[in-house]
Image (cartoon, rainbow, N blue to C red):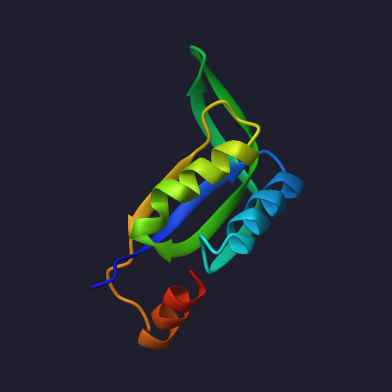
Length: 104
């Protein structure tokens, strides 16, 4: 049985998010990427609290593709430690998940 995932990736700008998203889709590592701009992130970095605007990518793929997705994002991303996290898709439209499978 194929297991599907949703991957969250943050980026510093829309331009970089688009570059990452296109690379993932072109290489058929993900079926789709949504880009949500103007999110606010508060986090610890280098011993202090940082607060800034970021862009969130939400990608849909198969669990077996995660390592390749992670490697591709790291090639393109400007962050030293980019956020690349995956959550399992427990339920989904059969037609949609079939499409994700066929596109990846």
